[in-house]
Figure (cartoon, helix red, strand yellow):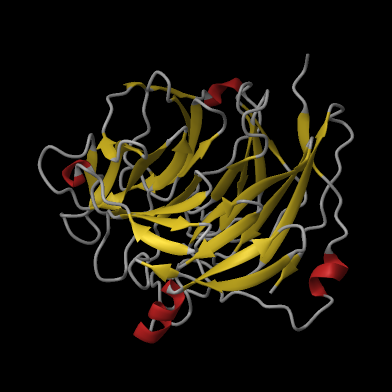
Length: 378
């Protein structure tokens, strides 16, 4: 039986998304955290266009919530011990119905704290592991996934705390010799409250940051792209079987289309846990630091990429969140980021608040490709 193909569907969202001038819109932002909480997307923090202490404090006291059914945003006040005001470039994942945030920077220091947003009380708490010395190094631009009752953190850019960590480290020559890229992999067990750093086998990713790390079923996760000093931008695909802790790398020599090198892109699984899972990748920044507008889907079991049409608004440092609306129908919410060439400064880099909705349907007849009319509201 051939794999079902997830294809882009035509959309008629334009009138509903742009028909009202009074809709609430979040502030433009990039490098925010985002995740699915229940049937909604929750966004918090990130770079905004205002780096004042007042703005940073205000941003940490709220979350932005998008409802894919009503296609509306709302803002909600949160309480508790939130991530440090102004935190950006953190990693996030949804687990047990709550949103978790790890690492990032508040503009003053890199962090390795783990925070949990309770979706019932909308209250943040800082998670206190039993072995704080076993936590990952303080870092930005790492990635995290939920795996069973645990969080798995991979890669990033930061400062090692000692000579024995991490598993592999590549020093930076751009800023200071203390900083660099890592390929360390840590697991936080939510039930036991303990960090671990398991040994892995196979061909593992090199030290990198600004990559994507995406769970595709209850044992596998996929790494794509990223950057480091030695290779610059990358476009390799690595798959880890978390039940055996074994890595494998997809072979590019089989022919067929393949995305160009990039970092700061976003990815999600279109059909998590189903037969023939497929990975969606949008945007990113290329080797010239220009934002990309392309859309790619990877058939993970076959190791084949295909490029979708049409292209979307070029952006990087944005987020993607997938929802199953009905059997065989998935909607993806793309939000935020920056749509101009990277200028080297977080404060001056323009951010956007565009929200794009993509719908994908399972189609057993690949020739019947249907495309979405991508719709932004700003």
